[in-house]
Length: 354
Ligand code: ASP
Image (cartoon, rainbow, N blue to C red; front, side, top):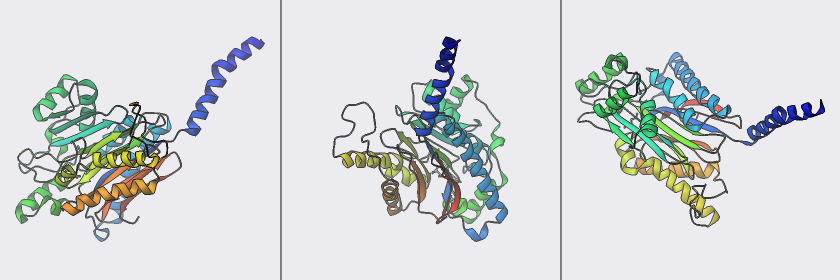
């Protein structure tokens, strides 16, 4: 009987205790965005605001749930972005902006900070969830970046969910295109808020991931591609540094290489904090065990966003560090955003200063 009791303890109680210990120690963290822009408080009704906040909270909760249960940062990023791609309030998947010719061309990218594997698609017109296709490019092809008809052929071969192009149409976005043409104004003028979606996460196992999905900018033509599907510009993740997803006037984010620039500065700041070389043993481990404080992460993100601003661009980024600091930086009047951590942070916000 005693032997049986001991066996029971070994088999069930000890692993459970170990798991509980692991859970108590391990940090997780997630930040999300639904685009930045010149939305103004006065013209947003209480009802609209509540609808955006509810959508952000639901997406944030979906990602946090994955992380809380020990799931991967990559799965959390996808859990956030998939429902946002289905939500017509955001400029990703259904609700994407229109091209000059009146089509919806979707871009998405995703990156795993563990091994810097990355996948991206641009200009797809019939894929319900471009973020999932980007991830399939990462895991199931020798490539990083697929475009247009080739990306759709790749999806077809893998039984991806295909929808008719009308699935993505919304009246609001069509009106924006018409207004742009009639008033001869820029995409920034008609889009007001960019509406791209993104997520960055740290899981309990210390892995980082980032993802971004968008319809681009209203009236884009000539096969224009923004920063969102460009690894290093709109999306980047490196376990040694951080995970970043961006939103804003993509041309400037590409020129600055925003997401990778933030990660590089994080890595260098970490190395300098210890005054040692970066990743000297080549293990891919964090450059330093001294975690950078939230204030330093904020300063690095702000300094890269200042470069975007100095060139004439605008928008924002979300950043999560290896120690779980979740930071926003944006130079627009607002950014749809949210963050949650194992430390009990759980918040969504829209305007600056909230
Ligand atoms: N960055 C996106 C692009 O330039 C637009 C956005 O963030 O909404 O395509």
